[in-house]
Length: 276
Image (cartoon, rainbow, N blue to C red):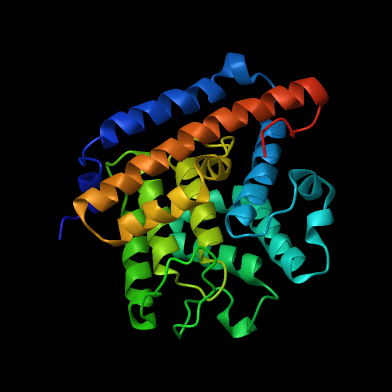
């Protein structure tokens, strides 16, 4: 086995060009003379908008104002899921260093806060042991539980070892592996989207988590996201390449969303400038 399989993914058609476009888009947002002193506010707003969009991807669709006010975390089945999503996004800044040294520990922590109160506490923070899985995207046929431990261990090893591949490629691979494996009974997609943010931060592309890739996913459309994940799951070079280029497009759209939020902060003093 190639000791750096992420590097092989970077060689797929169109990926180098997509990565370059992402870096240009992200650097434009992070440029100090453009960002000014508004970085801390944008970081918080990015997580609020990211949480709102990530929940909406899974069908938990509260308006972004309800996330700012806390009304999204109402005492209802949808509200309890929303509360878990927000707990995960709120914790992301503290998990970047954990991700660098122990990625599987970071995944377990994310799942523990996202899935708390949604099922059997024995499932929280641990890979599932049955094929019973919440599948809001209807990806279909969850992976056999027997392969989850080895696959997650391999992913942790690859992340921990480091790669010469660009951060975009690594983040895309981590996102798709977790989302398509569905290693947890509840919340695998949420954990996948959060983990990809950790990769981008840990690798220095978006160290303060300012861009909003989840809004990018929503803008490109939920059906396209599902199709791209299914393409990745085929394991073919074409399918994986399509996912990588799609993921890059979500980051470009997420950078544009961050710029809109930044404009809203400067105009209104709050981070609600992005389109919902």
